Length: 260
Image 1 (cartoon, rainbow, N blue to C red):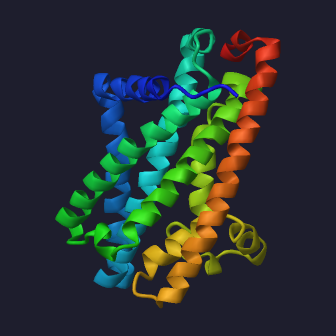
Image 2 (cartoon, one colour):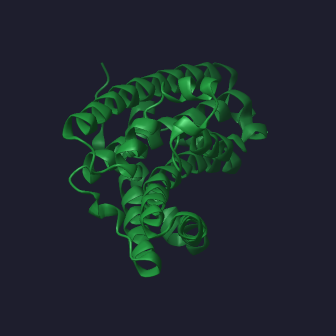
């Protein structure tokens, strides 16, 4: 069994973080849309439901974007490898696919934390809400959202590996579709029955139920975290296995074909 070189994985995370440092516009974009959603949904919820509703909705927006922007980071960096033609050079080295995936997992942590911390400041300055104040569940919820960010990023990478650049819009479609069907901004009970049943097969409703009801009974919170953890690990395993199979298949046909 091939050993994993942690330095290679760390170098991948550093490489992608360097892109963020070098391209200030990319950093601005990563923080602009969360700030925009905080203001938009915050003011709408204040108008409709009052201050208590505002803080609940804003907390969901902050946690959601901590996952969404990390997902975008993984998918867009893979897309960048394709558009630059660097994908063939990257895996012509001793870097293994597992090391690249671990490097993406390392990348997700700082991206999620940057977005989460900046969004907390914005939410507090505009609405006086502090999403991280929901309690000790903040850490496990963020960890679960990071796992899901990696799963979504690898799913986008799988589609790009299979179909090439013509499906690059799926990077954004998948993420925002889950915001609608996963109950990020509202309880899934508002959705059609069929969609509710499908949504319960994903970890997101269980995660955001805790965010909306941080004062729920302890046994309910523990149950939701347990279900969300099991589903998150399951989907991560499926995402990794699918990506590896698709990538190896593309290796046989030549990675260069994906750049067209």
